[in-house]
Amino acid sequence: MQPYRIAVMASGSGSNFQAIVDQVQKGKLDVSIELLVCDRPNAFVVERAREAKVPVFVFNPKEYESREAYETLVLKELQDRQIDLVVMAGYMRIITNVLVEPFFGRMINIHPSLLPSFPGVRAVEQAVDYGVKQTGVTVHFVDGGLDSGPIIAQRAVEIHEHETADSLTERIHAAEHVLLPQVVRWLREGRVSIDGRRVSVRL
Ligand SMILES: Nc1nc2c(c(=O)[nH]1)N[C@@H](CN(C=O)c1ccc(C(=O)N[C@@H](CCC(=O)O)C(=O)O)cc1)CN2
Ligand SMILES: NCC(=O)N[C@@H]1O[C@H](COP(=O)([O-])[O-])[C@@H](O)[C@H]1O
Image (cartoon, rainbow, N blue to C red):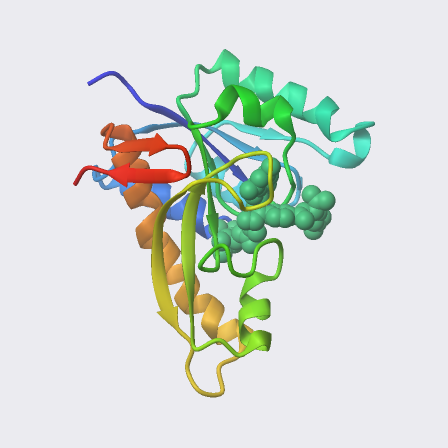
């Protein structure tokens, strides 16, 4: 099989990035992690990337006059490395068509709720505050909207009595660390197809 080159975009701790790295290092995910893109120079995910010897492109959005300006640089990094798939794993910035258009169908995001419920930031807190009995995780293709792209996979996570956002986040992360590498594997193996909003996975 041809090498499958991925880039990960993240802003925070990077536990989902680490889950992908771990699967690759165990020989369970046949991809090449070519780049980490991060918008927060001090984020722990940068440390994880250095440890894993993954090249890093870090930028500070405050140093650019617009989203489009820094996204143009990110796009060049992705194209120069001939990236096949972009994985957003806790990247906390809305992206514009500068990146959406060239990568639609080759860019995914993991979100800590069962979309379309609780889009945006603080999704776990939203679910706890709303009082739902079940939430979960979603992996979807990224489009120009906010967490509105075609859904590839979801896993439900029960909300226990007296649950806090912190205790729930731990179980959400555990579900994410299984589902995200699995979806990357399906995409690498060419098992995923999109028809409008409907996504099919050939298992
Ligand atoms: N065009 C898209 N961009 C992004 C998507 C998407 O589906 N379409 N997913 C997000 C990830 N995400 C939720 O999963 C998300 C991240 C951040 C925000 C947001 O409102 N960010 C603010 C800044 C917040 C901050 O600085 O803390 C912003 O960009 O102004 C919403 C949803 C990744 N991008
Ligand atoms: N709206 C986007 C969003 O909330 N994404 C969430 O950020 C966390 C990143 O954790 P990590 O840095 O440990 O991978 C993950 O739970 C991911 O679903």
